[in-house]
Length: 125
Picture 1: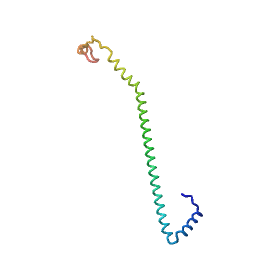
Picture 2: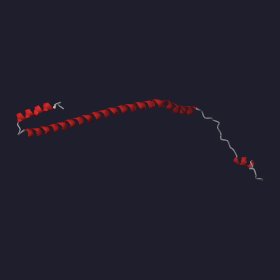
Picture 3: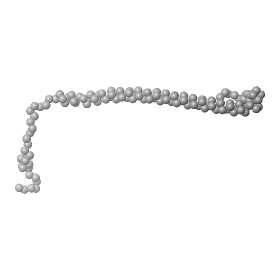
Picture 4: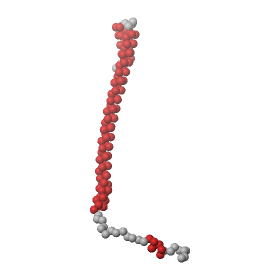
Protein backbone atom coordinates (compact mmCIF):
# COMPACT_ATOMS: atom_id res chain seq x y z
CA UNK A 1 0.00 0.00 0.00
CA UNK A 2 2.70 2.49 0.99
CA UNK A 3 5.48 0.55 -0.76
CA UNK A 4 7.60 0.21 2.39
CA UNK A 5 10.38 -2.38 2.26
CA UNK A 6 11.48 -4.53 5.20
CA UNK A 7 14.59 -2.48 6.11
CA UNK A 8 12.52 0.72 6.17
CA UNK A 9 9.96 -0.98 8.41
CA UNK A 10 12.70 -2.02 10.85
CA UNK A 11 13.97 1.57 11.02
CA UNK A 12 10.44 2.88 11.71
CA UNK A 13 9.93 0.31 14.52
CA UNK A 14 13.28 1.20 16.16
CA UNK A 15 12.47 4.94 16.06
CA UNK A 16 8.96 4.26 17.47
CA UNK A 17 10.46 2.15 20.28
CA UNK A 18 12.86 4.93 21.22
CA UNK A 19 10.32 7.78 21.00
CA UNK A 20 7.25 6.09 22.52
CA UNK A 21 8.92 3.72 24.90
CA UNK A 22 8.61 0.01 25.42
CA UNK A 23 5.71 0.21 27.90
CA UNK A 24 3.26 2.14 25.63
CA UNK A 25 4.30 0.60 22.27
CA UNK A 26 1.99 -2.51 22.42
CA UNK A 27 -1.11 -0.40 23.20
CA UNK A 28 -0.31 2.08 20.39
CA UNK A 29 0.35 -0.80 17.95
CA UNK A 30 -3.02 -2.33 18.86
CA UNK A 31 -4.80 1.01 18.37
CA UNK A 32 -2.97 1.54 15.09
CA UNK A 33 -4.01 -1.96 13.91
CA UNK A 34 -7.68 -1.26 14.78
CA UNK A 35 -7.54 2.05 12.92
CA UNK A 36 -5.97 0.44 9.84
CA UNK A 37 -8.70 -2.25 9.90
CA UNK A 38 -11.42 0.40 10.09
CA UNK A 39 -9.78 2.31 7.25
CA UNK A 40 -9.69 -0.84 5.10
CA UNK A 41 -13.37 -1.58 5.80
CA UNK A 42 -14.27 2.03 5.01
CA UNK A 43 -12.34 1.90 1.73
CA UNK A 44 -13.99 -1.41 0.86
CA UNK A 45 -17.46 0.04 1.55
CA UNK A 46 -16.73 3.11 -0.56
CA UNK A 47 -15.42 0.90 -3.37
CA UNK A 48 -18.56 -1.28 -3.22
CA UNK A 49 -20.80 1.80 -3.32
CA UNK A 50 -18.95 3.18 -6.32
CA UNK A 51 -19.19 -0.20 -8.08
CA UNK A 52 -22.94 -0.34 -7.38
CA UNK A 53 -23.45 3.16 -8.76
CA UNK A 54 -21.43 2.36 -11.87
CA UNK A 55 -23.39 -0.85 -12.34
CA UNK A 56 -26.68 1.02 -11.94
CA UNK A 57 -25.49 3.66 -14.38
CA UNK A 58 -24.44 0.97 -16.86
CA UNK A 59 -27.82 -0.75 -16.45
CA UNK A 60 -29.63 2.53 -17.05
CA UNK A 61 -27.57 3.16 -20.18
CA UNK A 62 -28.23 -0.38 -21.37
CA UNK A 63 -31.94 0.00 -20.67
CA UNK A 64 -32.03 3.25 -22.63
CA UNK A 65 -30.15 1.65 -25.53
CA UNK A 66 -32.57 -1.29 -25.59
CA UNK A 67 -35.51 1.12 -25.53
CA UNK A 68 -34.11 3.01 -28.53
CA UNK A 69 -33.53 -0.25 -30.39
CA UNK A 70 -37.09 -1.34 -29.58
CA UNK A 71 -38.48 1.92 -30.94
CA UNK A 72 -36.32 1.56 -34.05
CA UNK A 73 -37.58 -1.98 -34.62
CA UNK A 74 -41.16 -0.83 -34.17
CA UNK A 75 -40.63 1.88 -36.78
CA UNK A 76 -39.04 -0.62 -39.18
CA UNK A 77 -41.98 -2.98 -38.68
CA UNK A 78 -44.43 -0.17 -39.36
CA UNK A 79 -42.62 0.72 -42.59
CA UNK A 80 -42.47 -2.95 -43.58
CA UNK A 81 -46.16 -3.46 -42.85
CA UNK A 82 -47.23 -0.42 -44.89
CA UNK A 83 -47.28 -2.30 -48.24
CA UNK A 84 -49.20 -5.14 -46.61
CA UNK A 85 -51.74 -2.69 -45.22
CA UNK A 86 -52.07 -1.13 -48.68
CA UNK A 87 -52.75 -4.54 -50.23
CA UNK A 88 -55.27 -5.39 -47.52
CA UNK A 89 -57.12 -2.11 -47.89
CA UNK A 90 -57.08 -2.17 -51.70
CA UNK A 91 -59.64 -5.02 -52.12
CA UNK A 92 -62.05 -3.24 -49.77
CA UNK A 93 -62.13 -0.20 -52.03
CA UNK A 94 -62.42 -2.24 -55.24
CA UNK A 95 -65.20 -4.47 -53.86
CA UNK A 96 -67.26 -1.53 -52.70
CA UNK A 97 -66.95 0.16 -56.14
CA UNK A 98 -68.25 -2.81 -58.20
CA UNK A 99 -71.90 -2.34 -59.16
CA UNK A 100 -74.39 -5.05 -58.33
CA UNK A 101 -76.53 -6.41 -61.19
CA UNK A 102 -80.07 -5.10 -61.05
CA UNK A 103 -81.65 -8.00 -62.98
CA UNK A 104 -80.51 -10.80 -60.74
CA UNK A 105 -83.44 -13.16 -60.23
CA UNK A 106 -83.44 -16.51 -58.48
CA UNK A 107 -83.72 -19.59 -60.67
CA UNK A 108 -86.50 -22.02 -59.81
CA UNK A 109 -85.59 -25.65 -60.28
CA UNK A 110 -88.07 -28.40 -59.67
CA UNK A 111 -86.07 -31.16 -58.02
CA UNK A 112 -88.91 -33.71 -58.11
CA UNK A 113 -89.28 -33.33 -61.85
CA UNK A 114 -85.58 -34.06 -62.43
CA UNK A 115 -85.44 -37.03 -60.06
CA UNK A 116 -88.51 -38.78 -61.58
CA UNK A 117 -86.90 -39.02 -65.01
CA UNK A 118 -83.65 -40.48 -63.65
CA UNK A 119 -83.84 -44.17 -62.88
CA UNK A 120 -81.10 -45.92 -60.99
CA UNK A 121 -79.59 -48.97 -62.63
CA UNK A 122 -80.87 -52.33 -61.57
CA UNK A 123 -84.33 -51.09 -60.57
CA UNK A 124 -87.21 -51.87 -62.95
CA UNK A 125 -90.58 -50.15 -62.80
